[in-house]
Length: 373
Image (cartoon, rainbow, N blue to C red; front, side, top):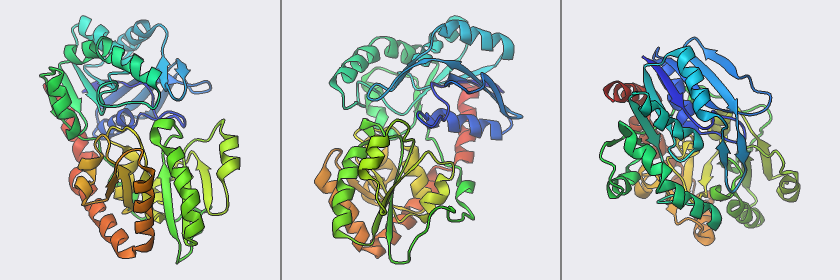
């Protein structure tokens, strides 16, 4: 197959869109020719051959930062047609129906193509920003253009079970659940990052993600300050792009709380960590949590999106309500003082990922979905 993947972003430091990124890598690893249509930032090549089977086309967009986090690509249809004429793909996957690039679905259907739309959230319906204005815009978009994208698709792929009830309520008939996955090979034979030293008696607590309001990083920062005062062996790492946030870093960074910025060695950092915290107010199927589970971290996460299914409703990690500062802090402290609980949860989390979220197997399933559309 020659597959066109339309995704709003493709793993830039300040905007990731991991579902599209991993789908592209997984399908290309199987030998399918994958062409990615996405947005790009200044300085990135417009066309890049990542591997023999993976080519990326990037076009500049207008990006509205946090709390909007939305890109608008001028001349979208003209640019899609340009890639179609040059590459002549046979199969089509559109990621994240709420983003501007997903409107390519309507063009592809007009041209008689079979299109699979993949999503891990229903923004404005079951996923919400911390901005009332953004939520209002999402609510309107979801019930107009967003619904057109979903209902014209030949198949809708839901990335976790928590979306099924909403899909049925919205009247979406052609859908199936298919998980995103983790490349388990990345978590074998890992060495400690050269710039990270650890002590035998310390507990390393890590956050990985964009420093955006919906991720709840500010809530975790407040909790971290209190925990560091009470527990001398606790240490926090925040991993994620800090561009334009020098004030935040200066205000909070100290010897036992470090901002590491954007990193390419996240598996090694997670392998060195004891506890992983996801404090999000809304989520889809969070990649950072899945990778922390694959690394064997004891995980604390909020009950949003696909988190309850990933953590097996509390069997493979601790689940707390979103925005509940007290519950989040207590859960982290409990893991700091209970090494046996950390070991038990981390071991179970690793098994869950190996059994149900192996990227190589899930990529083969996705290929079958695309063939059958």
